[in-house]
Length: 366
Ligand SMILES: *Cc1c(COP(=O)(O)O)cnc(C)c1O
Image (cartoon, rainbow, N blue to C red):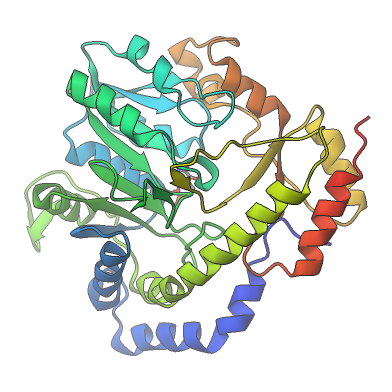
């Protein structure tokens, strides 16, 4: 069975290096935050071409910290795309603010700038854009709307490490970037991890205090804080992986571009990739009439596929109290009911890539 993603191959290829890095942390007992977490923060900030990166314990808390550092809380509203992993909205909800869901475009599947302004009220404080599946959203148009209405913009970069928008790297494009290093993301920890990139020292300082139990000086708590620190072992592992990220990204792009060129079956629709973007193919999602039928067909051919994501955020039970109805975000709803994700990870062999292409091209639907 070809898995949708197989992390064992990376581990096997770089086992010694990873274990050496972990051993060092153990020998120095630099387990929570500490030297290796800090070192990774510096390397990751440099990678993102940013002055600051604050490592945290996952991508969801990265989003929570970003909202808190911008002063967002009870009574505020934050614009969020309807089609994203639910954690984009969690960070907003944790502060007591309300996520306001906006539909995506029919072709890029990214937040639709034409549908943002109608959702802005006097309570709106920020827009979170998501570079979904590794494809940057329309940053310039979203920034122009934010400027006009005096809003912050945060980019959810959990799927877009290294993606470019007009030559600039994800994480550097707006006020703050939120990253996840969950296993399976383009850059991943051996457990959980995340980071917030920012331009302003005041934002970085606020997040550093928040993630560290609300203190600057140990045992003196200035604000109600959280235990959101990045673990030392994760920092050390991420420093090893970060060296390979450019290589992994190139390979993801090679495979993604091959799928685009060689999967010619008209039963599939692919994500549109605008000229001014360089996607990093975190997930290769297609739409197809009956995704469950397609997944079963692929499984018969020993190819594992899955779905990102079967339910859009505005129709999740957790947000039923917000009162959204089916039909509120038609493009996101179409995507949710038709999406299927093909295998794509850097260690795939050419034979495996060809197997996927052939299976897709021979698919006849029902
Ligand atoms: C993975 C992901 C998150 C959450 O990250 P975790 O590290 O799993 O908490 C947030 N947003 C998006 C778009 C994601 O894909």
